[in-house]
Amino acid sequence: MKAIVVKGVTKDFGALPVLKGVNLEVEQGEIFTLLGANGAGKSTLINILTTLSQPTAGTVAIMGLDPRTAGNQVRRLMSLNAQATTLDGEFTGAENLSLIARLRGVKDVPAEINGLAQRLDLTSFLNRKVKTYSGGMRRRLDLAMSLLGNPQLIFLDEPTTGVDPQNRLALWQMIRELRDAGKTVFLTTQYLDEADALSDHIAFIHDGVIVKSGTPAAIKQRVTATYTLQVAPADEAVATATLGAAGIAFAPTEHGLSLTAKQAEPALTALLDAGVTVTHYDQDETDLESVFLNVTKEAAHANL
Ligand SMILES: Nc1ncnc2c1ncn2[C@@H]1O[C@H](COP(=O)(O)OP(=O)(O)OP(=O)(O)O)[C@@H](O)[C@H]1O
Picture 1 (spheres, rainbow, N blue to C red):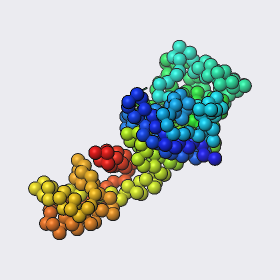
Picture 2: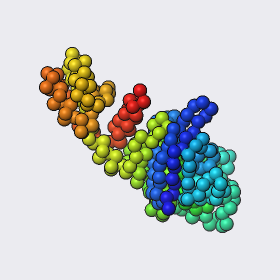
Picture 3: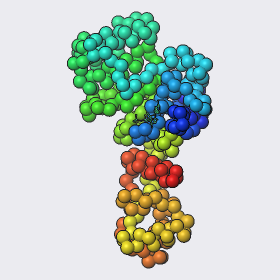
Picture 4: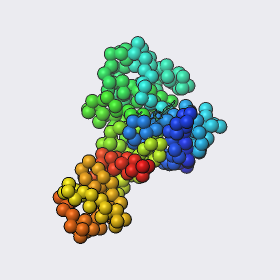
């Protein structure tokens, strides 16, 4: 059984369509990362998956259950670590944990808190008021909060935003440990290196649609095969017309013309045959940053 199956989910806010037919599947025991620019629809989708909001159309299954008819059951399976932290600064870390543990119906609250404190290395500051914590301490406490009650499915909305590099690595390690303990982790992040380092699967959301998904390696491999080609400024109009006439698709970028591997060689040949001066022709770098820029640009282009 899949941990999450989303089929054809749309969400309109009044006349504004925000999700426009999202499809995705998350396996049990994997780290799945949703990547997208501000306003792409990540939080809207997380709200639907965590039963905080209803889709306008389409279906969602969480561990085979429909959140619309089995909301309570679904909520018991999951925890949400949202961007707006729910920690109360006037309480100590231990008090915050204890409050949520009771709300979640944890049976042996002190044992659960001690276990988590040891696992997440919180013990040294657990009895201080949260308002005295650093950002990294807060994030670690946040993570502990989301593990109370032993949920199977953990939603982490930008868990390392504002965290220093050392604590960021520590959080990465904890997130991997969750996966290794059999939990399913649904992550959103604005950091592409984080997605690359942690994820089993990545989905790029752009303007309410998943525009690309796969393993980090597969995505990079596919996008390894993009090339940037530059022509002399005086030849730009001829180059565009030549490629257009030859039916070769390209995307103009700030660095030149972006082409897939399949199109790159025919494009180069066509341009040289037409007497165009090509000043630069090279394969693009293969980090997720360029993948992200590429897929969002392609998608924006397709919508024109
Ligand atoms: N309750 C709402 N009413 C109207 N519009 C909304 C509502 N919630 C979200 N939106 C709009 O939906 C779009 C997607 O928002 P969402 O918060 O899902 O994006 P996001 O990908 O999570 O962005 P960010 O990275 O900034 O958190 C935005 O244009 C936002 O203004």
